Image: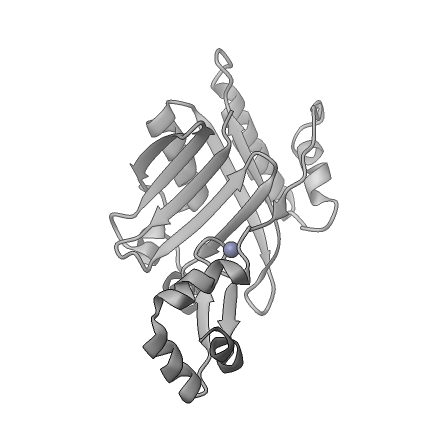
Length: 228
Ligand SMILES: [Zn+2]
């Protein structure tokens, strides 16, 4: 069983990156680097991953299976859609035929307000045509009418695609990161007493950003003074 799965999409520079991880209890977290987000917002008619993240981008996955055992896989990204590149990753790295698809609903503030997706993988011995059927069902459904993303879409999605589908189980996911302000105290101390005193004297706040979820934590001059 996988205890934790971490995914990194890395561009030509470390500042162009997408990170996400999930654990077996359904906790998910992630972030898009600021430079990549700015690029995406500044290029509304972008059509390929290469335009966005540059050539030589790659997907890196780390599977933590517990007991200090982890497996890392890495592949290139030859396709224009991120979801197709994930399919490519599993095919190349784990020899598992896979199909991924996702749809995001983005508001005027460029925030993702809702998303749905499909991750389909063949069990050993299953005919590869099943993946093609799923892909064709999605394309056909999108051709008939665009998916409308509302509260019920996730529950009805399987039935929108196939009439004779049986839901075996459901799991909930939640956005969760174990970071908190106290986690950043050691980093604050590591700046050194001189720098902290300078920040207090200049009435400056010091901010840290969690690199797993993007949450920012700010220490006010008063808080810094208390620590000093
Ligand atoms: Zn965090």
